[in-house]
Length: 153
Image (cartoon, rainbow, N blue to C red):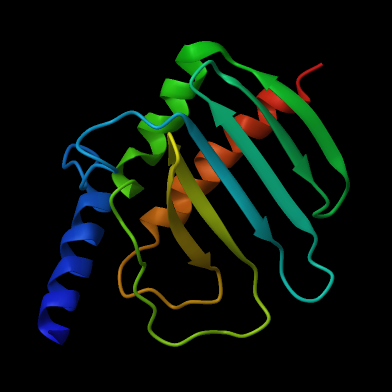
């Protein structure tokens, strides 16, 4: 049982390293209706960041990390597709391996909604991952893009 879980984690991490290798689909290849993220920064006063984007490209962004900022997103369907392409290798991953942990670090949840179903991947930013943190890099890239769209003047 433990070896099977380790094998699944290794396959999931391998797919993160190579964007050409697709991860398991959220549900039989269905495109999610909405992708969202909600997380906290470091420590007790680390603040919070939340964003979402739906298939139409509409969404919202809000953060209180370092400063307060918020805005609406209207990136069109192509914007949603850009976010989905960045995060696609994570859609089938249900857990990120963690070798030890630094306490008092941020954490968050990335979610895909399809109809009345929600699939989520939790991030604990204090984890020491066995592989390069490709999952966090993808989350950061998507979050930065949503932030740019929301705060563009």
